Length: 233
Ligand SMILES: C[S@@+](CC[C@H](N)C(=O)[O-])C[C@H]1O[C@@H](n2cnc3c(N)ncnc32)[C@H](O)[C@@H]1O
Image (cartoon, rainbow, N blue to C red; front, top):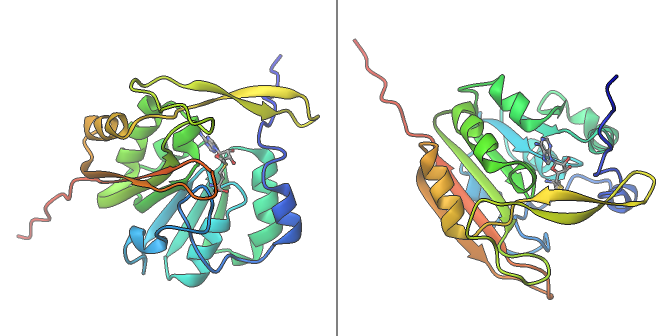
């Protein structure tokens, strides 16, 4: 007999989805979702094949599909509730926006050499063992493709990020409202950089974006797959 895993993202973003269903006009990487750089960090997306790793309600992916000209954006999320929310909000943006209900690791493993850009905003890299996720993410990029994600610069309590690749248990809620925990990887900048270089990614940068309004600071992490030279006869 198999037991379904409870959806720890059942409640996330529900109020906003009900009150603010429009495609966002801005893209933000930061915790506060108002400040800092935007989609320009991803480069020119014209014609690009893009993946959002842990898209939630797919707001960022919807913004890219509407305000940029990618071939398509795959908004990937494992949570049944988040996938349903994204479908309710943005299904009409198909085929430029493709809502994928899957674990990111499984999806990326099945799609090597596929993406020009893979990104996440406090998404799968925060909640998935990076030693499992980053190798498949690197492999899923095309030659010269870019991985960009935002993640916590430190714990929400203010406690410093980890100096080793270890997750913490953070509070979550079961669909019935009772308390649970999930694993979150809150790592220092140099730890992320080392992990990315270890999977063969190049041009690794990790920038700390300042906290505002008492919220936590954000790390903005970028890396690229080595460009494979094209030889012509
Ligand atoms: C904090 S939410 C952020 C959602 C969205 N990026 C946003 O900014 O609103 C994290 C999301 O990542 C998803 N997630 C975490 N790990 C995942 C994985 N390995 N595969 C697919 N989705 C994942 C969760 O289901 C959740 O919807």
